[in-house]
Image (cartoon, helix red, strand yellow):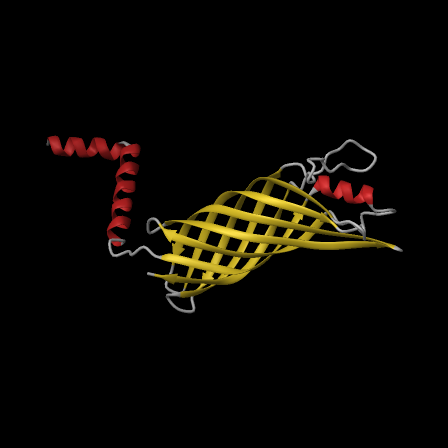
Length: 236
């Protein structure tokens, strides 16, 4: 009789039922993964970024004669070459170190002048990933951050090229789809969003880049989206 009363009391308490259900599911998941073996992954490929850099766009508009919103787009595009190494921590969670080299080269012609610029960006990131594993494909949900290093190269002057540099934090989140060629080799299809908190651009004498005819300092901070295509392979 006592056992029946206890059972009735438990069934009436929804919180206890939920806790018991969660406990059963977690233990079932752990039990089903007892044969899981941690792996190390390597991946590499090519990507395209589309981003907004408001301060830098203001600089271009003020620097180039008769520039308009048609010649200087709000969104800008660049390419990146990337590679990384990833390690399983649990059946669901993995961690990765990733490096990307971003390049954007562009010019504006106002005859006879040519305004020629290049942006180079070193982008190391630490990432934490949640994995969804299936026999024919994997999916990864990722969040991470890194400290990046930028160079803005002004080649507009024929006699002199000026480099401005900066650095700063960046955060990103992405989704990766990995169709399997085999258990060791997968295609790497990735889409991501990012926000960059970069500092002000400065030359070798610590002089800050300024928007012409103003006192506004310039940085490459901004936000955007991107896509990557590559290959991932694993070793035991």
